[in-house]
Image (cartoon, rainbow, N blue to C red; front, top):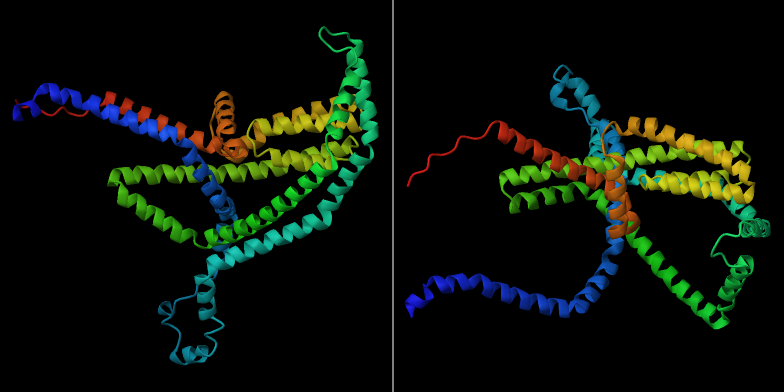
Length: 415
């Protein structure tokens, strides 16, 4: 019996036995996948506000750290370096010590909290400026758009009539009538009971959204204040579960990824402000009543790499075509395309400084994959992540090439 357990046949059957066990476990996991996905989805809905708060804190950490460095410049002077000051003079300064070094020391120790407070005060001030000056202009633009909706309808009818006159194969005979009937049927399906139910659901969703926003703001404040402690804990945890070389590699590429995200947020923000301002000026020059609104939209969608400015420009050209005329929209499209080329070839490379030296094809592929798996957030984080993956591949290829050029000495084998 002992020989049977030691036999080569039994040892060769062990991998198949383990594979069968794994297949059985996988079957039970897949058969109960609905249970797991339901609870994972519920858990994710609970922690989403804290995740969003962490993302906002990460974005705000860049200006917050800048403010912290400015506040820390009030570092108190050390009395050990002042031996030349007489004893009598020190006694005279003792009474003012609370308003001198002690006050500076208090500011220095609370620099992180004070920087967070200053940052949120600046954000509130910017929101007040937006509400007082920018929001009325945007609201007026929206009101103009709604006021002229009948004119836009006549424009659409004219375009449809032009397309119908082309007699394209496969086109319905009464395209205008079918579009109007589809719109009428959609509106007719909105009965009073369904509308009331929709409104009640909207109020409930609004209340949940308000509560989640409060959680997002509170969690972002705590993340910002406790950034240093959280960073130290993550470093300690990585060091605890990895060896020295692995720990060093993880920290190195984590710092690179962090740098990529910071550079991407910084460059896209500055570039969005520049591009949005230039587009607003251009639209004002051609007499668009929606110049400010379209400029803001172009600035925001610029965060989406490669596709954002293209979609924003197409949207702006379509709005100009509706609100003005097609020749003006064509002129706007030409100048907007020229501005995009100026931005892509001069402004963005100057801001990024070679931080994201990715080919256009790689950018398109990464953004498409990011959108498929992560939606808008996936599109935003695609470029920094792909950049660090490219660095990993380049470093590994360079490492393998270095080994081939200078192979390590082979150890002598003894038999």
